[in-house]
Image 1 (cartoon, rainbow, N blue to C red):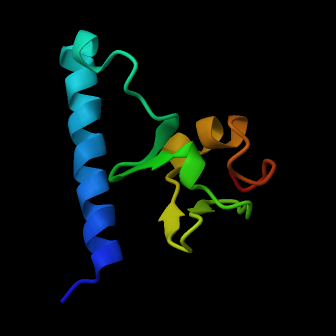
Image 2: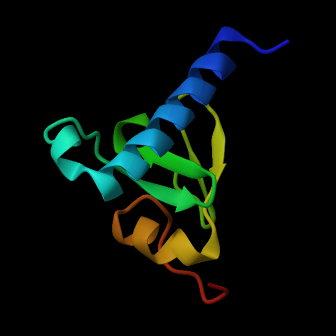
Length: 91
C-alpha cells in the first residue's frame, strides 16, 4: 500500500510527462503554465523549486528527502544549472 506522499509524487510525475508531451505538440496550450525544471533521467523530471540544498555528483535530493538519479546524458545540463556538485574527472 502506498502512502499519500508517494501517490502525490506519482501523479505529479504523470502530469509532468503529459505536459512535456503536450509542449512538444501544442506549446500554445501551455503558455504561461510552466514550472522551472528539467529532465534529469529517462524517467525523472524535476522542478527546480523541489530541490534541497544538498549537492552530489550523480544524484539530486529533493526537499522531501527523495533521491533522484541523474543519468550521464543529463549531468552536464544539471551541473550547468548548479544542481550537481562541480565536475568530477570520472564524468
